[in-house]
Length: 231
Image 1 (cartoon, rainbow, N blue to C red):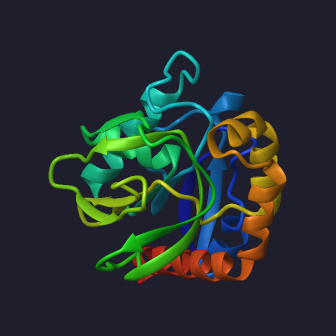
Image 2: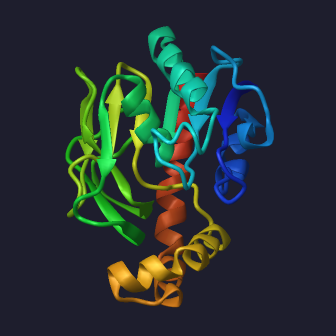
């Protein structure tokens, strides 16, 4: 079975559905937790790399002292042609590692159920409208040179991109389970009320209602990512 190295930045942003989906399609997952002191290797120890989200920013090196090592790992993975997936913060770190730019999102945060438009699909993403969970305050504002833009949303132009042939950044979450979203909503209740004018319960309810569509879309993406590694 192929092995994927997982970098997790916070207890609240784990593998979620990926813990079930990836092994089911032939990908063994090996998470490391640098916030608990785990070593971040200089190169990918395995066949693929997945970098998850987190509450810190892509440049918050004082808050999360392991971020320079993660950016270096991502840069090496791109150079080595290792299949790579960055999610939310992971996508922002991938952009920065490849000399792109991340800033505070001018349109405000995207929190809760959303949709992104994929004009033309590739190996990972199917063309069309993709239902997703959004949970970000920062955004990729300048793609790395040579990167391919794959998806946008109503508020942000960069929602998915590819660096090289097999490294993808997804600003959105496809792995988020309903309990994960409920946890995030409780933590960011003030921001939900202030920025969105809604309640955390409303935001969680939207995601709950959309679970069949979210699960189908996320599972297909996981299957495609595993196929890139194992085929």
